[in-house]
Picture 1: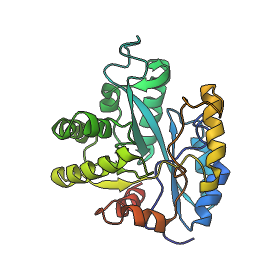
Picture 2: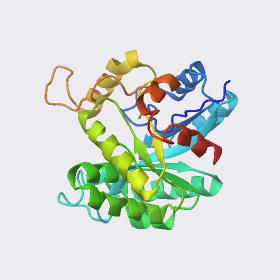
Picture 3: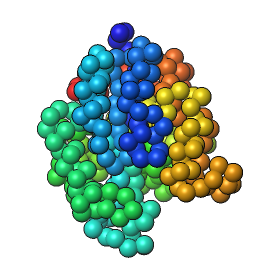
Length: 274
């Protein structure tokens, strides 16, 4: 197994229920085929496969990075009404840096299910402040608070969001860059790179892999239809943009993000800190 400069840290298996079209075994097989030596799993709102993933990755000589893509309520997670609850949340990626971080990540996820559940297992920033120790934070996809704020509320407002997360995760907060060909991502990359440089926040490139190989996009599309109760033929349904949500090679990731200082290298830096 080669020492890979880039590591995929933001990924989903079939335990991201009816959204990930790949199981743990196929993920590890793909990572091995790509000559990578580590991979992260960040299911939507749960850690159902953490132990299975950890054990199987170790057996395959692949370093497992255990994480979760959590739902952060816009406000208190205890608000459960249509105005404050349904759809009013952001995504955030958390990675366990050590055993303390793993325990805290379990506590965060548990609070989401037992206290904050409203359509999704949501938590709030008070929970993150309480259980942040040992956890690395990535800013997330376009549904992340920082990205959403950059695009729709403005640069200065986004600086305030970044400052808040820097306080919660001191020295452990990274701004994610993603490029699946979505127009909003192009704008976000430009603004995020500027913000990262101005505020001295490290960048990290991810690809939000929901299926192992590019040709598997149609199977993932079927998963989405099942999960949302829609037909493939329906026009007004949830559909992922393009065919880019797969495990890209290092060369593909370098081509997308090589010009952004630290974006590739920091994925390795994060792995080495775990």
